[in-house]
Amino acid sequence: MRRGEPVAAALAALLLALAGCTGASEDAGPAPSAAPPEPSISLVPLPEDPPSGVVEADLRQSSRDAARGRVQVWLDNGTGEDLVPTRLTYRDARLSRPVAGERLRDLPDGTERGFPLTLPPARCPVPSGSAARVVPPLVVVELAGEVLRLEVSDEADVLDRYADRACTAQALDRVVAARFLDRVPLSAGSPEGEGQAGELLLRLTPRPGAEGSVLLREVRGTPVLSSVGGPVWRPGVRLAGGDRPVVVRLPVRPARCDGHAFAEAAGATAFRLGVVVREGGRRTVGELELRMSDAGARAALDLALTSCGLGG
Image (cartoon, rainbow, N blue to C red; front, side, top):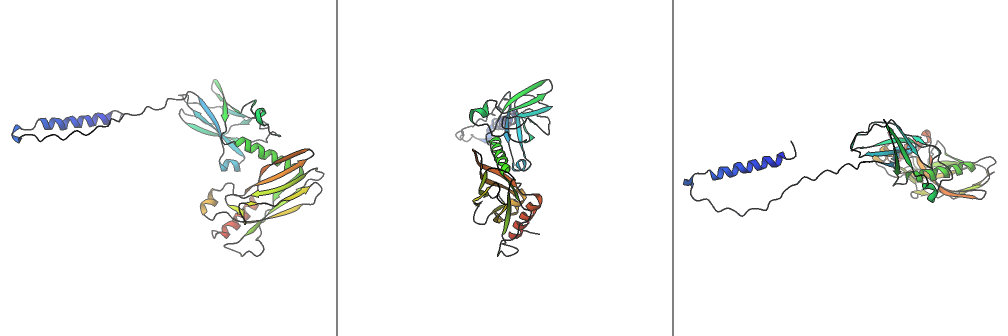
């Protein structure tokens, strides 16, 4: 039904009702006095927003994207016509090279779609301040017979956080190799089964011949796994080149015990390490993300599920 038809139908029904009243027999006696008319309300359809006339681009990252080492550039097509991208390239001074967009597909008018970008290594040290914006982030969208060069907004600071963490990880790795062991033993004195607690084992190995030092200030938990004493571990462990490897024991328990948390937590075993790295006259203070291996992740999640009484 077209937009005007409901109003026309209602008006026709009203006219028929009025016609029936005026056609009544005179023998029916005097007509009763009419009730005072009720105030009427006119409904006027609101006009639709006109197309913006442009394509807008912004960066977004879900937890699943983060787990896969990627972001997505979203394009909002307000041109008034369908677009068919044949190639998409993201350029950013914080990255070591341009990135090709994946899953290219049509972009109908009035819609927005995300195109995955697998993140390359960051360019370190990270450009900061005005230097980071000399060449703003751009996405180059190639169409049939046309090329769009669009500035990309990043309200959530996705790329800043990625570059900061990637460069902190590079600084740490030059001095110390860090990894979680694949086993997650029970804590001393912990019962087995429901209510049990375990220990994450983080091994720190100084690089042979490396100069400098590392302070492991804290390790942040995940939506599924947490410190026994709260959401953050504070080891305060310091290592220098030439030191022997150490294993940092992190008592762990489930952060939550509902099945939804386990089903949706793509970052369940991705921990953030807060470190201070000193190399010569350079000092790096920041966070990095360290993921458990598949085997370690299974061991940690099995312990948490059993502790919650959700194990099979």
